[in-house]
Image (tube, rainbow, N blue to C red; front, top):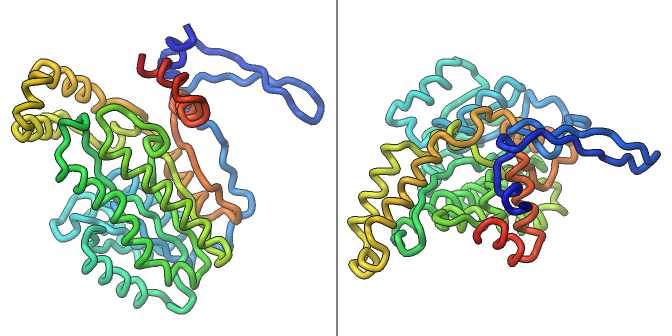
Length: 342
């Protein structure tokens, strides 16, 4: 019974009112869990940094999704925003929309985080755009990322390397390149990870590996930057597939065809096409899953950039996923396996 209830999304569960005890006076207050987009921890803006008007922030992956929304939101907050776009040179619609704001505080830049040459050009562009480069740049948001799917035996080494090159090494490359500017400003680094950076999931090992790596990299960096006054935060979004168009039926079918065609004969024979097709069909059901409202992620990043004491980790996710993450990261593996695998 417990396994059944915990393994269902919150939106499918009946409403429950829980009593939360006030530690100071012992009184109890009702707490109603009813929203599928419930955010486990409320983030306030008490104690913001100085007015952000003169503060520069660079966000990667702004062609669409979180990055696109972040660029517009941070601009509205008064930041000087450099929006890194992979497809600026191809005239992508998202880039055109950002450029159409015609603001001297929002500038799109061509940026492939896998290209050291492009990263170096953006560093020089940002430095030359700052009023006082010696005072540095306030913030870097490492948002650019890609995803794929496939069980371990179905996934090629090339796919593992491709995902890692963007998600993990792209983040490391960007961070190392901009740290001198960030250190001068005693600024902020915000790395977009995922709930799958804290808990594994079948058929998602290429993505999980990179996001687990982001978590470790961010922790190491936070320790090193603490005495230098630079604050490092990780944002771990839950399921926002439908909002970010991470997958589409077309992209899933194209990936599946390529995957099957490239499989070693022994793997095809042992698993069979029926098993393979069932896994692909299950993946296809995720295309329209998750929350359409990205505001919890946007607000988390904004808090990390503006609060005088930003949090180490932010969890903008459905309460179901938050609870599942706590179970899978804090309880013995045998218990979480019993609930979520068996």
